Length: 474
Ligand SMILES: Nc1ncnc2c1ncn2[C@@H]1O[C@H](COP(=O)(O)OP(=O)(O)OP(=O)(O)O)[C@@H](O)[C@H]1O
Ligand SMILES: [Mg+2]
Image (tube, rainbow, N blue to C red; front, top):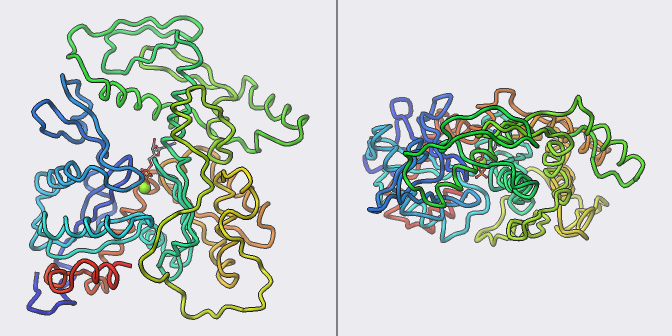
């Protein structure tokens, strides 16, 4: 590092490899700026053993006595700071051998972070880790960079959250953005609810317990034996291992139907359901016990709930309670004025209505599925920007990989926005898709002009967290 008292231009550029950290609710990604992929992709859950020691990564899947599995983040926000610090330290120091004095760090953040959280975040990285330089980048901004589309709409289907964010000139329009929890975790919960309520004869034993298995197909009972020598594990460990079954179920069996399943025309609804119940649409899902179940209409219904979250009715009330109606509004109080694109002047006589959140199409039911979220967001964007945003819709995040999702989304958006030319952009490579925010951060931090963007510890010490957040990390 060559600070030399100059507080703005610090890093010479090329010779410095910055660290990019992208903490997600499901996976955390860490690596070097300029790389195509993160060096580390690790679970955002950790294990805590009896003596308080924390374990990370693949190690958390090893059965141990008294090992509790806990989340580090919720809705892309760090909720367990001690564990987060421990985890980052572990990967920074043991895996990446980071030199805090010489390598700055770019951290992705969701658009719904609030002031005290951001203060804590930068304080931690400057003070606990002693990073010499830092940058906070909004995840949708990174995604827009990864695709080279400074004006776009970022639709991120993640684990805890689904979010829709307009990005203009690389900057997120937070007040026009929407967010729900109808993402990957929601699908896991539906699958769990479905399997557990269907028949107790479906044995949901996690892989680590199984010693031998013989393939069977439900309603035939599972035929397997369990290992005798495994340690007595905690409930949280067991649940975490069961989650891996729901993940696999979701990632292998689901498919988005071409047409809406809940058609308002009863005749049509019946024929659609018959179509998706045909034998040719059926798939088998094999549990770790070797027992398989046949999935027909169900595998389409789960995927449909991304578009129509009400379609699945939970049997277990406790799970249902975790998903109260949510129409997508983000309730965050921004402590500074929203970015306004400079070059455009509002036309006062514009007769295009821009419905306030809560008005419009589906609001009476207080639930917006994916297409509604996007259509609503588009309708709130300045009329002059709307066409270009509609033409640059980036669909990303792990859940966007469900087959036929992009096709169905395109059809729904085109139908409900007849005046707009809709274009969806989803990178074809699945690992690029799930790492897109990280990759965007990597691109951003290696731009020739980015060296001016790092905020040094010296600057932070001089100006304080509030000013840095307000002036440099908007
Ligand atoms: N092929 C696939 N089909 C369906 N779902 C998938 C697929 N691959 C990954 N997922 C799901 O995507 C989710 C993880 O996505 P992603 O990595 O974008 O989330 P995250 O960034 O960790 O979370 P968030 O953005 O909510 O903080 C998990 O629920 C995972 O099971
Ligand atoms: Mg994410």
